[in-house]
Length: 266
Image 1 (cartoon, rainbow, N blue to C red):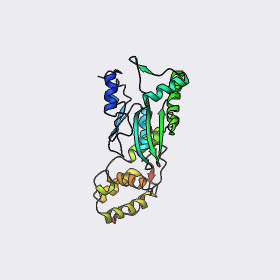
Image 2 (image 1 turned 30 degrees about the vertical axis):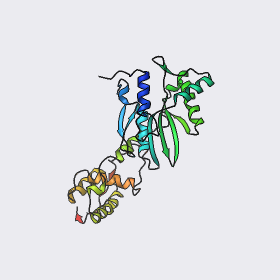
Image 3 (image 1 turned 135 degrees about the horizontal axis):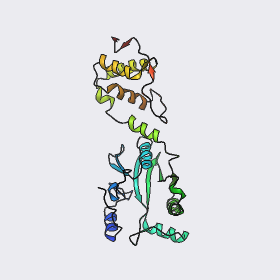
Image 4 (image 1 turned 180 degrees about the vertical axis):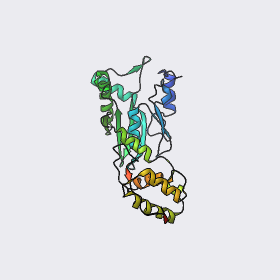
């Protein structure tokens, strides 16, 4: 059963401020909104981050896909989600722009930005919406407040929709970085380097399905099932193999086996 939305009360505001929830400069970041703060509709998700090891709370599938792209971008050094905007600032901006500030349970509601992150040393803030969301005048008004808020802080802010977020790219990255490191699976460096050399030779031929290359290598070299697939991912991550991560990955392309694998006759 989904949980009921938590009411916007002074006690809750005090608790969030006291715990520094949604405050990006807190020593230990907690998102301003968590997935169980609202009734579940099957679209929220929690993901463990690569950078901090913390669990991140994403409130839509588009947030999830964008987070995955950031999570595996080596130039991104920090990610925050559901970041609270300072209430006194948003109230002032709303008054200046003559836009009604969001309210909940008869109290001014603290606004949030979906995702903030640091890339190449520069902080960015992103509102993630669907194109359908942007058809709403009220949504555009709230985004105007959010945009002015970040502009006054000198932070790059933008709106992203499903048109700018690649689902295939995100899922490919999630697959690519999932599983054990090849150094854990094959601790012997000499054997590992010889295996990489043999695999790369086989990979350049195209007459037998890739799955057969995997099964042959694992069988002949007596490897734990899944080891060669993790080796393949390692070679992609280290740019020894180039594939198009913007398109769905197809492991069933035909390939040809060379004469030997790990010095053993096929």
